[in-house]
Length: 80
Image (cartoon, rainbow, N blue to C red; front, side):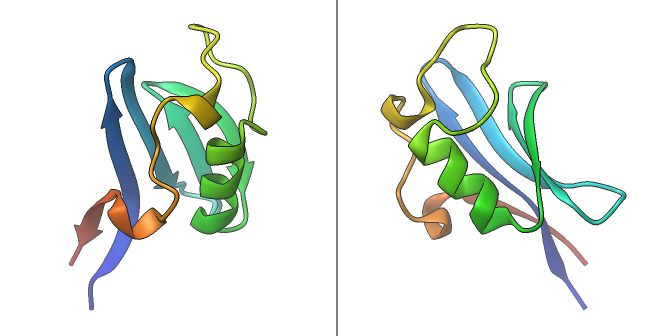
């Protein structure tokens, strides 16, 4: 059985991702900076596109970097 373990999206400022952690929670990242921990990937996505996550070192407003409104548009990393 395969399942999604991460979603990624490349912007001109860098890569944003939402990844499943060993503890079963999902984390939002900008490059390698953890921007928050979430129960599910949709909650992480909602915070990223609304700029409701932790600040990043570049001071980017994540609601204005061009992240897709639909998580289905992000690249999926699947483990089989």
